[in-house]
Image (cartoon, rainbow, N blue to C red):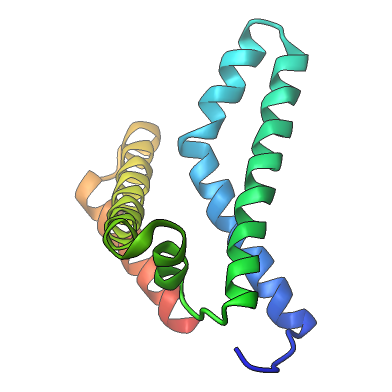
Length: 141
């Protein structure tokens, strides 16, 4: 890291990436939690879930940022190893990669199924097209 300062553009890119990741994952996981509490008419429980989620995210991101800044750790695997040791740090890193890969496969298959149910498109064609689109988006930045 060194003495580099973060620019506003870089910060906006990181915030946008984080929000896109959390919103995308929220449709697959957090949405059901909110719907469960909202379906019973409990607005306060829904708000409580939101507050608890925000607080937990704040603690986790603060811990990652603190270690990265004070220990000059440049990658996430170093942070994993710092908090949980070399063995569990490697296991946690492997779990994080597997989890993200499974989330990608899950979301692509959900997209294909939605297209199949709504418009009758071919399932394999839709899943391949969204995979190609995401690959192009990744390559173009």
